[in-house]
Image (cartoon, rainbow, N blue to C red; front, side, top):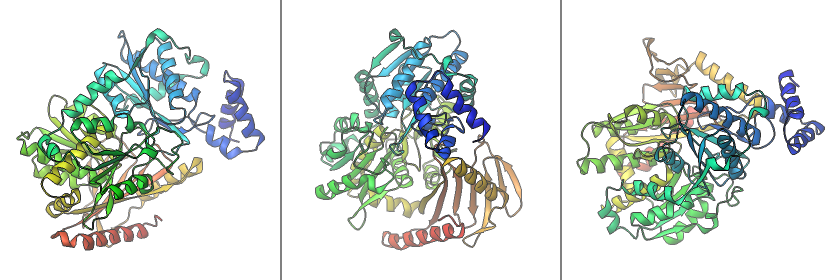
Length: 576
Protein backbone atom coordinates (compact mmCIF):
# COMPACT_ATOMS: atom_id res chain seq x y z
CA UNK A 1 0.00 0.00 0.00
CA UNK A 2 1.35 3.48 -0.88
CA UNK A 3 2.52 5.47 2.15
CA UNK A 4 0.09 8.37 1.55
CA UNK A 5 -2.87 5.99 1.28
CA UNK A 6 -1.83 4.03 4.37
CA UNK A 7 -1.42 7.28 6.30
CA UNK A 8 -5.02 8.27 5.45
CA UNK A 9 -6.33 4.85 6.52
CA UNK A 10 -4.44 5.15 9.82
CA UNK A 11 -5.95 8.60 10.39
CA UNK A 12 -9.46 7.22 9.95
CA UNK A 13 -8.75 4.29 12.26
CA UNK A 14 -7.26 6.41 15.03
CA UNK A 15 -9.30 9.60 14.62
CA UNK A 16 -12.66 10.69 15.97
CA UNK A 17 -14.73 8.54 13.59
CA UNK A 18 -17.67 6.42 14.70
CA UNK A 19 -17.11 2.74 15.63
CA UNK A 20 -19.11 1.43 12.64
CA UNK A 21 -16.87 3.33 10.19
CA UNK A 22 -13.71 1.93 11.82
CA UNK A 23 -15.21 -1.56 11.78
CA UNK A 24 -15.91 -1.34 8.03
CA UNK A 25 -12.30 -0.29 7.39
CA UNK A 26 -11.01 -3.19 9.50
CA UNK A 27 -13.20 -5.61 7.55
CA UNK A 28 -11.66 -4.39 4.26
CA UNK A 29 -8.17 -4.84 5.75
CA UNK A 30 -9.01 -8.32 7.09
CA UNK A 31 -10.39 -9.35 3.71
CA UNK A 32 -7.12 -8.26 2.10
CA UNK A 33 -9.06 -6.04 -0.28
CA UNK A 34 -6.20 -3.68 -1.12
CA UNK A 35 -7.69 -2.46 -4.40
CA UNK A 36 -10.92 -1.34 -2.77
CA UNK A 37 -9.05 0.19 0.17
CA UNK A 38 -6.76 2.12 -2.16
CA UNK A 39 -9.70 3.36 -4.23
CA UNK A 40 -11.54 4.47 -1.08
CA UNK A 41 -8.58 6.47 0.27
CA UNK A 42 -6.26 7.41 -2.63
CA UNK A 43 -7.81 10.88 -3.01
CA UNK A 44 -10.47 13.17 -1.61
CA UNK A 45 -13.79 13.58 -3.39
CA UNK A 46 -13.56 16.71 -5.53
CA UNK A 47 -16.04 19.12 -7.07
CA UNK A 48 -16.41 18.25 -10.76
CA UNK A 49 -19.01 19.52 -13.25
CA UNK A 50 -21.71 18.19 -10.91
CA UNK A 51 -20.16 18.92 -7.50
CA UNK A 52 -19.26 16.18 -5.02
CA UNK A 53 -20.22 12.70 -6.22
CA UNK A 54 -19.16 9.14 -5.53
CA UNK A 55 -20.14 5.71 -4.32
CA UNK A 56 -21.33 5.54 -0.72
CA UNK A 57 -19.08 3.92 1.88
CA UNK A 58 -16.10 4.53 4.12
CA UNK A 59 -13.08 6.53 2.99
CA UNK A 60 -12.00 9.97 1.81
CA UNK A 61 -13.00 9.10 -1.76
CA UNK A 62 -16.51 7.99 -0.79
CA UNK A 63 -19.80 9.67 0.10
CA UNK A 64 -20.28 9.42 3.86
CA UNK A 65 -21.04 11.52 6.93
CA UNK A 66 -17.45 12.74 7.16
CA UNK A 67 -16.79 13.70 3.54
CA UNK A 68 -20.17 15.47 3.47
CA UNK A 69 -19.41 17.11 6.82
CA UNK A 70 -15.96 18.32 5.74
CA UNK A 71 -17.29 19.63 2.43
CA UNK A 72 -20.01 21.52 4.30
CA UNK A 73 -17.57 22.91 6.87
CA UNK A 74 -15.29 24.06 4.05
CA UNK A 75 -18.23 25.69 2.27
CA UNK A 76 -19.38 27.33 5.53
CA UNK A 77 -15.88 28.72 6.12
CA UNK A 78 -15.72 30.04 2.56
CA UNK A 79 -19.13 31.70 2.86
CA UNK A 80 -17.95 33.55 5.97
CA UNK A 81 -14.89 34.79 4.05
CA UNK A 82 -16.94 35.75 0.98
CA UNK A 83 -19.77 37.55 2.77
CA UNK A 84 -18.20 39.13 5.86
CA UNK A 85 -20.64 40.71 8.27
CA UNK A 86 -23.74 39.35 6.48
CA UNK A 87 -26.38 37.08 8.01
CA UNK A 88 -25.64 33.95 6.01
CA UNK A 89 -28.53 31.89 4.62
CA UNK A 90 -28.52 28.59 2.73
CA UNK A 91 -31.22 26.34 1.25
CA UNK A 92 -30.97 22.55 1.33
CA UNK A 93 -32.93 19.91 -0.59
CA UNK A 94 -32.50 16.22 -1.38
CA UNK A 95 -33.73 13.61 -3.85
CA UNK A 96 -35.07 10.05 -3.39
CA UNK A 97 -31.72 8.25 -3.22
CA UNK A 98 -30.69 6.03 -0.34
CA UNK A 99 -29.14 8.21 2.39
CA UNK A 100 -30.07 11.47 0.62
CA UNK A 101 -32.23 12.62 3.53
CA UNK A 102 -29.47 11.57 5.98
CA UNK A 103 -26.74 13.47 4.11
CA UNK A 104 -29.07 16.49 3.81
CA UNK A 105 -29.57 16.47 7.58
CA UNK A 106 -25.80 16.26 8.17
CA UNK A 107 -25.40 19.25 5.86
CA UNK A 108 -28.06 21.19 7.76
CA UNK A 109 -26.44 20.24 11.08
CA UNK A 110 -23.04 21.61 10.07
CA UNK A 111 -24.37 24.84 8.54
CA UNK A 112 -26.59 25.53 11.56
CA UNK A 113 -23.71 24.79 13.97
CA UNK A 114 -21.72 27.44 12.11
CA UNK A 115 -24.37 30.06 12.82
CA UNK A 116 -25.84 29.93 9.30
CA UNK A 117 -29.59 30.15 8.71
CA UNK A 118 -30.84 27.01 6.93
CA UNK A 119 -34.01 26.72 4.84
CA UNK A 120 -34.52 22.96 4.80
CA UNK A 121 -36.99 21.32 2.42
CA UNK A 122 -38.89 18.99 4.74
CA UNK A 123 -39.52 16.47 1.95
CA UNK A 124 -37.73 15.48 -1.23
CA UNK A 125 -37.79 18.13 -3.97
CA UNK A 126 -36.36 18.57 -7.48
CA UNK A 127 -32.92 20.12 -7.94
CA UNK A 128 -34.23 23.06 -10.03
CA UNK A 129 -36.57 24.06 -7.20
CA UNK A 130 -33.54 24.29 -4.91
CA UNK A 131 -31.87 26.59 -7.45
CA UNK A 132 -35.04 28.70 -7.54
CA UNK A 133 -35.31 28.79 -3.73
CA UNK A 134 -31.78 30.21 -3.33
CA UNK A 135 -32.71 33.29 -5.37
CA UNK A 136 -36.23 33.53 -3.98
CA UNK A 137 -35.09 33.38 -0.34
CA UNK A 138 -32.04 35.59 -0.83
CA UNK A 139 -29.54 32.89 0.15
CA UNK A 140 -25.80 33.11 -0.37
CA UNK A 141 -25.57 29.40 -1.11
CA UNK A 142 -27.44 26.12 -1.26
CA UNK A 143 -26.94 22.38 -1.45
CA UNK A 144 -28.94 19.57 -2.99
CA UNK A 145 -28.05 15.99 -2.10
CA UNK A 146 -28.32 13.90 -5.27
CA UNK A 147 -26.28 11.84 -7.70
CA UNK A 148 -28.63 12.73 -10.54
CA UNK A 149 -29.08 9.67 -12.81
CA UNK A 150 -26.15 7.58 -11.53
CA UNK A 151 -26.64 3.97 -10.35
CA UNK A 152 -28.10 3.39 -6.88
CA UNK A 153 -24.67 2.90 -5.23
CA UNK A 154 -23.90 6.58 -5.80
CA UNK A 155 -24.83 9.75 -4.03
CA UNK A 156 -23.65 13.31 -4.35
CA UNK A 157 -23.74 16.88 -3.18
CA UNK A 158 -24.30 19.81 -5.52
CA UNK A 159 -23.21 23.15 -4.08
CA UNK A 160 -24.74 26.40 -5.34
CA UNK A 161 -23.84 30.09 -5.14
CA UNK A 162 -26.06 33.09 -4.46
CA UNK A 163 -27.25 33.34 -8.07
CA UNK A 164 -28.77 29.85 -7.84
CA UNK A 165 -26.07 28.33 -10.06
CA UNK A 166 -23.66 25.54 -9.22
CA UNK A 167 -20.20 26.62 -8.08
CA UNK A 168 -17.83 27.74 -10.82
CA UNK A 169 -14.32 29.20 -10.71
CA UNK A 170 -12.97 30.63 -8.55
CA UNK A 171 -15.51 29.50 -5.93
CA UNK A 172 -15.33 25.76 -6.66
CA UNK A 173 -11.53 25.64 -6.25
CA UNK A 174 -11.63 27.99 -3.27
CA UNK A 175 -14.15 25.79 -1.46
CA UNK A 176 -11.87 22.79 -2.07
CA UNK A 177 -8.96 24.79 -0.60
CA UNK A 178 -11.04 25.51 2.50
CA UNK A 179 -11.97 21.82 2.77
CA UNK A 180 -8.30 20.82 2.40
CA UNK A 181 -7.38 23.16 5.26
CA UNK A 182 -9.48 20.98 7.56
CA UNK A 183 -6.95 18.44 8.78
CA UNK A 184 -9.26 16.59 11.18
CA UNK A 185 -12.94 15.76 11.47
CA UNK A 186 -12.65 17.34 14.94
CA UNK A 187 -12.73 20.69 13.11
CA UNK A 188 -16.21 19.95 11.68
CA UNK A 189 -19.10 21.31 13.73
CA UNK A 190 -21.67 18.50 13.60
CA UNK A 191 -23.89 19.70 16.48
CA UNK A 192 -27.16 21.04 15.02
CA UNK A 193 -28.56 24.34 16.32
CA UNK A 194 -32.32 23.85 15.86
CA UNK A 195 -33.13 27.56 16.01
CA UNK A 196 -31.08 28.10 12.83
CA UNK A 197 -33.12 25.58 10.80
CA UNK A 198 -36.45 26.50 9.18
CA UNK A 199 -38.53 23.92 7.33
CA UNK A 200 -39.92 24.92 3.92
CA UNK A 201 -42.00 23.21 1.24
CA UNK A 202 -45.39 24.04 -0.28
CA UNK A 203 -44.95 27.83 -0.03
CA UNK A 204 -41.86 27.59 -2.30
CA UNK A 205 -43.69 25.16 -4.62
CA UNK A 206 -46.44 27.72 -5.24
CA UNK A 207 -44.15 30.59 -6.26
CA UNK A 208 -41.99 28.29 -8.39
CA UNK A 209 -45.02 26.86 -10.20
CA UNK A 210 -46.43 30.36 -10.78
CA UNK A 211 -43.16 31.29 -12.48
CA UNK A 212 -43.37 28.21 -14.73
CA UNK A 213 -46.96 28.99 -15.71
CA UNK A 214 -45.92 32.53 -16.68
CA UNK A 215 -43.71 31.10 -19.46
CA UNK A 216 -46.65 29.68 -21.42
CA UNK A 217 -47.02 31.33 -24.84
CA UNK A 218 -49.53 29.11 -26.69
CA UNK A 219 -52.39 29.04 -24.17
CA UNK A 220 -55.04 28.86 -26.92
CA UNK A 221 -53.33 25.84 -28.51
CA UNK A 222 -53.25 24.10 -25.11
CA UNK A 223 -56.93 24.83 -24.60
CA UNK A 224 -57.78 23.28 -27.97
CA UNK A 225 -55.44 20.31 -27.37
CA UNK A 226 -55.99 19.92 -23.62
CA UNK A 227 -56.83 16.21 -23.99
CA UNK A 228 -53.35 15.54 -25.45
CA UNK A 229 -52.42 12.07 -24.16
CA UNK A 230 -49.31 12.39 -22.00
CA UNK A 231 -47.55 9.52 -20.21
CA UNK A 232 -45.17 10.62 -17.45
CA UNK A 233 -42.74 8.67 -15.26
CA UNK A 234 -40.56 10.13 -12.49
CA UNK A 235 -38.50 6.88 -12.42
CA UNK A 236 -38.89 6.64 -8.62
CA UNK A 237 -37.60 10.21 -8.20
CA UNK A 238 -38.63 13.74 -7.28
CA UNK A 239 -40.48 14.55 -10.52
CA UNK A 240 -43.64 13.10 -8.98
CA UNK A 241 -43.77 16.03 -6.51
CA UNK A 242 -44.39 18.68 -9.18
CA UNK A 243 -44.68 17.52 -12.81
CA UNK A 244 -48.26 16.14 -12.68
CA UNK A 245 -49.63 19.22 -10.90
CA UNK A 246 -47.76 21.63 -13.21
CA UNK A 247 -49.18 19.89 -16.30
CA UNK A 248 -52.64 20.06 -14.76
CA UNK A 249 -52.27 23.77 -14.03
CA UNK A 250 -51.01 24.32 -17.60
CA UNK A 251 -54.38 22.98 -18.75
CA UNK A 252 -53.59 19.39 -19.72
CA UNK A 253 -56.38 17.03 -18.65
CA UNK A 254 -55.16 13.66 -19.94
CA UNK A 255 -51.93 12.95 -18.02
CA UNK A 256 -51.12 9.34 -17.10
CA UNK A 257 -48.44 8.61 -14.48
CA UNK A 258 -46.62 5.25 -14.64
CA UNK A 259 -47.81 3.96 -11.24
CA UNK A 260 -45.10 1.28 -10.92
CA UNK A 261 -42.49 4.07 -10.94
CA UNK A 262 -44.47 6.78 -9.12
CA UNK A 263 -43.22 6.02 -5.59
CA UNK A 264 -39.82 7.57 -4.70
CA UNK A 265 -37.35 4.74 -4.03
CA UNK A 266 -33.54 4.95 -3.91
CA UNK A 267 -33.21 1.32 -5.00
CA UNK A 268 -34.90 2.15 -8.34
CA UNK A 269 -36.46 -1.34 -8.40
CA UNK A 270 -37.97 -1.25 -11.91
CA UNK A 271 -34.88 -0.06 -13.82
CA UNK A 272 -31.20 -0.92 -14.22
CA UNK A 273 -30.21 2.79 -14.25
CA UNK A 274 -32.62 5.63 -13.39
CA UNK A 275 -31.44 7.51 -16.48
CA UNK A 276 -33.94 8.92 -19.01
CA UNK A 277 -31.19 8.70 -21.62
CA UNK A 278 -31.52 4.90 -21.48
CA UNK A 279 -34.34 3.23 -23.42
CA UNK A 280 -34.66 0.57 -20.71
CA UNK A 281 -35.58 3.24 -18.12
CA UNK A 282 -38.54 4.27 -20.30
CA UNK A 283 -39.74 0.74 -21.13
CA UNK A 284 -42.74 0.80 -18.73
CA UNK A 285 -43.75 4.26 -19.92
CA UNK A 286 -43.52 3.17 -23.56
CA UNK A 287 -45.68 0.10 -22.87
CA UNK A 288 -48.32 2.34 -21.31
CA UNK A 289 -48.04 4.80 -24.21
CA UNK A 290 -48.63 2.00 -26.74
CA UNK A 291 -51.83 0.95 -24.93
CA UNK A 292 -53.10 4.53 -24.73
CA UNK A 293 -51.91 5.58 -28.19
CA UNK A 294 -50.26 8.53 -26.43
CA UNK A 295 -49.00 11.72 -28.04
CA UNK A 296 -46.05 12.20 -25.72
CA UNK A 297 -43.93 10.23 -23.23
CA UNK A 298 -41.80 12.10 -20.67
CA UNK A 299 -39.42 10.69 -18.03
CA UNK A 300 -37.45 12.63 -15.42
CA UNK A 301 -34.35 11.44 -13.56
CA UNK A 302 -34.25 11.10 -9.74
CA UNK A 303 -33.56 14.78 -9.00
CA UNK A 304 -35.73 15.99 -11.92
CA UNK A 305 -33.19 18.16 -13.67
CA UNK A 306 -33.11 16.01 -16.84
CA UNK A 307 -35.99 14.82 -18.99
CA UNK A 308 -36.13 12.24 -21.75
CA UNK A 309 -39.04 12.07 -24.20
CA UNK A 310 -40.51 9.75 -26.81
CA UNK A 311 -43.01 10.48 -29.59
CA UNK A 312 -44.35 8.59 -32.58
CA UNK A 313 -42.12 8.80 -35.64
CA UNK A 314 -43.15 8.92 -39.31
CA UNK A 315 -43.73 5.15 -39.22
CA UNK A 316 -46.16 5.42 -36.31
CA UNK A 317 -43.67 3.82 -33.90
CA UNK A 318 -42.60 5.38 -30.61
CA UNK A 319 -39.10 6.73 -30.86
CA UNK A 320 -36.89 8.13 -28.13
CA UNK A 321 -35.60 11.58 -28.93
CA UNK A 322 -31.99 12.22 -27.98
CA UNK A 323 -30.93 15.27 -25.98
CA UNK A 324 -29.82 17.20 -29.05
CA UNK A 325 -33.16 16.64 -30.80
CA UNK A 326 -35.29 17.56 -27.78
CA UNK A 327 -33.15 20.60 -26.99
CA UNK A 328 -33.24 21.75 -30.61
CA UNK A 329 -37.04 21.38 -30.85
CA UNK A 330 -37.63 23.14 -27.52
CA UNK A 331 -35.40 26.06 -28.49
CA UNK A 332 -36.88 26.16 -32.02
CA UNK A 333 -40.37 26.36 -30.52
CA UNK A 334 -39.37 29.15 -28.15
CA UNK A 335 -37.72 31.13 -30.96
CA UNK A 336 -40.69 30.65 -33.25
CA UNK A 337 -43.28 31.42 -30.57
CA UNK A 338 -41.36 34.52 -29.45
CA UNK A 339 -41.14 35.72 -33.05
CA UNK A 340 -44.86 35.10 -33.65
CA UNK A 341 -45.60 37.03 -30.45
CA UNK A 342 -43.41 39.96 -31.55
CA UNK A 343 -41.05 39.47 -28.59
CA UNK A 344 -37.75 39.31 -30.53
CA UNK A 345 -36.09 42.74 -30.43
CA UNK A 346 -32.44 41.86 -31.13
CA UNK A 347 -31.44 41.69 -27.47
CA UNK A 348 -32.37 38.04 -26.89
CA UNK A 349 -30.03 35.08 -26.65
CA UNK A 350 -29.86 31.31 -26.19
CA UNK A 351 -27.02 29.24 -24.70
CA UNK A 352 -25.68 25.74 -25.33
CA UNK A 353 -22.56 23.76 -24.49
CA UNK A 354 -19.70 23.14 -26.93
CA UNK A 355 -20.62 19.44 -27.27
CA UNK A 356 -24.28 20.18 -28.04
CA UNK A 357 -25.53 20.25 -31.65
CA UNK A 358 -24.55 23.19 -33.84
CA UNK A 359 -28.07 23.03 -35.26
CA UNK A 360 -29.06 25.34 -32.38
CA UNK A 361 -26.48 27.95 -33.51
CA UNK A 362 -27.92 27.88 -37.05
CA UNK A 363 -31.53 28.18 -35.86
CA UNK A 364 -30.77 31.06 -33.49
CA UNK A 365 -28.92 32.98 -36.23
CA UNK A 366 -31.92 32.62 -38.56
CA UNK A 367 -34.14 34.28 -35.94
CA UNK A 368 -31.64 37.09 -35.29
CA UNK A 369 -30.91 35.72 -31.82
CA UNK A 370 -27.37 35.35 -30.45
CA UNK A 371 -26.22 31.85 -29.45
CA UNK A 372 -23.51 31.53 -26.81
CA UNK A 373 -21.42 28.39 -26.38
CA UNK A 374 -20.03 27.30 -23.02
CA UNK A 375 -18.00 24.48 -21.53
CA UNK A 376 -19.88 21.34 -20.52
CA UNK A 377 -21.91 21.75 -17.36
CA UNK A 378 -25.00 23.83 -16.79
CA UNK A 379 -23.11 26.01 -14.32
CA UNK A 380 -21.38 27.61 -17.31
CA UNK A 381 -24.72 28.33 -19.00
CA UNK A 382 -25.79 29.93 -15.70
CA UNK A 383 -22.54 31.94 -15.75
CA UNK A 384 -23.50 33.50 -19.11
CA UNK A 385 -26.95 34.29 -17.68
CA UNK A 386 -25.37 35.99 -14.68
CA UNK A 387 -23.02 38.06 -16.88
CA UNK A 388 -25.84 39.20 -19.19
CA UNK A 389 -28.47 39.84 -16.52
CA UNK A 390 -30.09 43.21 -17.19
CA UNK A 391 -28.30 43.54 -20.56
CA UNK A 392 -29.89 40.86 -22.75
CA UNK A 393 -32.94 38.59 -22.45
CA UNK A 394 -32.44 34.84 -21.99
CA UNK A 395 -34.92 32.73 -23.97
CA UNK A 396 -33.72 29.16 -23.41
CA UNK A 397 -30.66 26.98 -23.11
CA UNK A 398 -29.69 23.35 -23.14
CA UNK A 399 -27.11 20.62 -23.34
CA UNK A 400 -27.06 17.29 -25.14
CA UNK A 401 -27.23 15.35 -21.88
CA UNK A 402 -31.01 15.92 -21.60
CA UNK A 403 -30.84 19.14 -19.59
CA UNK A 404 -32.80 22.23 -20.68
CA UNK A 405 -33.90 25.54 -19.24
CA UNK A 406 -36.62 27.98 -20.30
CA UNK A 407 -36.91 31.30 -18.46
CA UNK A 408 -34.32 32.78 -16.11
CA UNK A 409 -35.78 32.24 -12.62
CA UNK A 410 -33.85 28.96 -12.25
CA UNK A 411 -30.09 28.74 -12.88
CA UNK A 412 -29.72 25.03 -13.51
CA UNK A 413 -31.25 22.53 -15.90
CA UNK A 414 -34.91 22.19 -15.07
CA UNK A 415 -36.98 19.12 -15.99
CA UNK A 416 -40.11 20.51 -14.30
CA UNK A 417 -40.22 23.60 -16.51
CA UNK A 418 -39.02 21.55 -19.49
CA UNK A 419 -41.87 19.03 -19.10
CA UNK A 420 -44.37 21.91 -19.07
CA UNK A 421 -42.90 23.56 -22.17
CA UNK A 422 -42.37 20.29 -24.08
CA UNK A 423 -46.05 19.45 -23.50
CA UNK A 424 -46.94 22.94 -24.77
CA UNK A 425 -44.68 22.42 -27.81
CA UNK A 426 -46.44 19.13 -28.67
CA UNK A 427 -49.84 20.82 -28.25
CA UNK A 428 -48.65 23.69 -30.50
CA UNK A 429 -47.53 21.22 -33.19
CA UNK A 430 -50.72 19.16 -32.96
CA UNK A 431 -52.76 22.35 -33.20
CA UNK A 432 -51.04 22.96 -36.55
CA UNK A 433 -51.88 19.43 -37.68
CA UNK A 434 -48.40 17.96 -37.36
CA UNK A 435 -46.61 15.69 -34.91
CA UNK A 436 -43.45 16.59 -33.04
CA UNK A 437 -41.52 14.25 -35.33
CA UNK A 438 -42.93 16.07 -38.36
CA UNK A 439 -41.65 19.29 -36.85
CA UNK A 440 -38.20 17.74 -36.37
CA UNK A 441 -38.09 16.75 -40.04
CA UNK A 442 -39.16 20.26 -41.05
CA UNK A 443 -36.32 21.71 -38.95
CA UNK A 444 -33.85 19.34 -40.64
CA UNK A 445 -35.14 20.32 -44.09
CA UNK A 446 -34.63 23.98 -43.27
CA UNK A 447 -31.29 23.84 -41.45
CA UNK A 448 -29.72 20.48 -42.32
CA UNK A 449 -30.03 16.98 -40.85
CA UNK A 450 -27.75 16.92 -37.80
CA UNK A 451 -27.00 13.52 -36.34
CA UNK A 452 -25.24 13.22 -33.01
CA UNK A 453 -24.24 10.32 -30.83
CA UNK A 454 -22.05 9.65 -27.82
CA UNK A 455 -19.54 6.90 -27.02
CA UNK A 456 -18.58 6.57 -23.35
CA UNK A 457 -15.66 4.41 -22.28
CA UNK A 458 -15.80 3.48 -18.57
CA UNK A 459 -12.45 3.09 -16.82
CA UNK A 460 -12.83 2.70 -13.07
CA UNK A 461 -10.53 3.40 -10.16
CA UNK A 462 -7.01 4.76 -9.99
CA UNK A 463 -5.81 2.73 -12.98
CA UNK A 464 -8.76 3.86 -15.07
CA UNK A 465 -8.08 7.52 -14.26
CA UNK A 466 -4.50 7.09 -15.48
CA UNK A 467 -5.67 5.41 -18.70
CA UNK A 468 -8.09 8.27 -19.43
CA UNK A 469 -5.32 10.82 -18.83
CA UNK A 470 -3.01 9.00 -21.24
CA UNK A 471 -5.70 8.82 -23.95
CA UNK A 472 -6.04 12.61 -23.81
CA UNK A 473 -2.24 13.05 -23.92
CA UNK A 474 -2.05 10.85 -27.03
CA UNK A 475 -4.88 12.70 -28.81
CA UNK A 476 -3.38 16.08 -27.89
CA UNK A 477 0.16 15.20 -29.03
CA UNK A 478 -0.84 13.18 -32.11
CA UNK A 479 -4.14 14.51 -33.49
CA UNK A 480 -5.52 12.73 -36.56
CA UNK A 481 -4.73 14.41 -39.90
CA UNK A 482 -7.95 13.13 -41.47
CA UNK A 483 -11.16 11.69 -40.04
CA UNK A 484 -13.08 9.27 -42.25
CA UNK A 485 -11.21 10.63 -45.27
CA UNK A 486 -12.00 14.29 -44.56
CA UNK A 487 -9.00 16.51 -43.72
CA UNK A 488 -8.89 18.09 -40.27
CA UNK A 489 -9.81 21.78 -40.55
CA UNK A 490 -9.77 22.97 -36.93
CA UNK A 491 -8.33 21.59 -33.71
CA UNK A 492 -9.76 23.19 -30.58
CA UNK A 493 -7.82 22.55 -27.38
CA UNK A 494 -9.73 23.87 -24.37
CA UNK A 495 -6.92 22.89 -21.98
CA UNK A 496 -4.52 25.23 -23.77
CA UNK A 497 -7.41 27.53 -24.80
CA UNK A 498 -6.18 27.60 -28.37
CA UNK A 499 -7.86 26.98 -31.72
CA UNK A 500 -5.60 25.86 -34.56
CA UNK A 501 -6.53 26.24 -38.24
CA UNK A 502 -4.81 23.04 -39.33
CA UNK A 503 -4.16 23.83 -43.05
CA UNK A 504 -2.27 27.05 -42.20
CA UNK A 505 -1.17 26.30 -38.64
CA UNK A 506 -2.61 29.65 -37.54
CA UNK A 507 -3.60 29.69 -33.86
CA UNK A 508 -6.27 31.83 -32.18
CA UNK A 509 -6.81 32.15 -28.42
CA UNK A 510 -10.22 30.94 -27.13
CA UNK A 511 -12.11 32.80 -24.40
CA UNK A 512 -13.01 29.84 -22.18
CA UNK A 513 -11.95 28.59 -18.77
CA UNK A 514 -9.36 25.81 -18.96
CA UNK A 515 -10.94 22.40 -19.50
CA UNK A 516 -9.53 19.06 -20.62
CA UNK A 517 -11.50 18.91 -23.88
CA UNK A 518 -10.36 18.43 -27.47
CA UNK A 519 -12.48 19.06 -30.56
CA UNK A 520 -11.67 17.95 -34.09
CA UNK A 521 -13.60 19.66 -36.89
CA UNK A 522 -13.21 18.35 -40.44
CA UNK A 523 -13.70 19.97 -43.84
CA UNK A 524 -16.98 18.08 -44.34
CA UNK A 525 -18.47 19.59 -41.16
CA UNK A 526 -18.01 16.59 -38.87
CA UNK A 527 -17.17 17.39 -35.25
CA UNK A 528 -15.66 14.98 -32.73
CA UNK A 529 -15.18 16.05 -29.12
CA UNK A 530 -13.15 14.13 -26.52
CA UNK A 531 -13.81 14.89 -22.86
CA UNK A 532 -13.10 13.05 -19.59
CA UNK A 533 -16.20 13.20 -17.38
CA UNK A 534 -16.02 15.42 -14.33
CA UNK A 535 -18.35 13.23 -12.27
CA UNK A 536 -17.96 9.64 -13.51
CA UNK A 537 -15.02 7.30 -14.30
CA UNK A 538 -15.54 7.80 -18.04
CA UNK A 539 -14.06 9.40 -21.10
CA UNK A 540 -16.72 10.63 -23.49
CA UNK A 541 -16.52 11.04 -27.26
CA UNK A 542 -19.22 13.18 -28.87
CA UNK A 543 -19.87 12.81 -32.60
CA UNK A 544 -21.76 15.25 -34.81
CA UNK A 545 -22.23 14.83 -38.55
CA UNK A 546 -24.69 16.49 -40.92
CA UNK A 547 -26.12 16.38 -44.41
CA UNK A 548 -28.89 18.15 -46.34
CA UNK A 549 -32.46 16.76 -46.12
CA UNK A 550 -34.40 17.81 -49.22
CA UNK A 551 -37.61 15.84 -48.63
CA UNK A 552 -39.24 14.12 -45.67
CA UNK A 553 -39.31 10.96 -47.76
CA UNK A 554 -35.49 10.90 -47.69
CA UNK A 555 -35.30 10.95 -43.89
CA UNK A 556 -34.57 7.22 -43.37
CA UNK A 557 -31.99 7.11 -46.15
CA UNK A 558 -30.07 10.17 -44.88
CA UNK A 559 -30.30 8.90 -41.28
CA UNK A 560 -28.63 5.60 -42.30
CA UNK A 561 -25.90 7.46 -44.23
CA UNK A 562 -25.09 9.61 -41.19
CA UNK A 563 -25.17 6.65 -38.80
CA UNK A 564 -22.78 4.72 -41.06
CA UNK A 565 -20.49 7.75 -41.18
CA UNK A 566 -20.26 7.88 -37.37
CA UNK A 567 -19.76 4.11 -37.22
CA UNK A 568 -16.80 4.43 -39.60
CA UNK A 569 -15.27 7.23 -37.48
CA UNK A 570 -15.66 5.19 -34.27
CA UNK A 571 -13.92 2.21 -35.89
CA UNK A 572 -11.15 4.43 -37.28
CA UNK A 573 -10.51 5.90 -33.81
CA UNK A 574 -10.62 2.40 -32.20
CA UNK A 575 -13.21 3.45 -29.62
CA UNK A 576 -15.14 0.18 -29.28
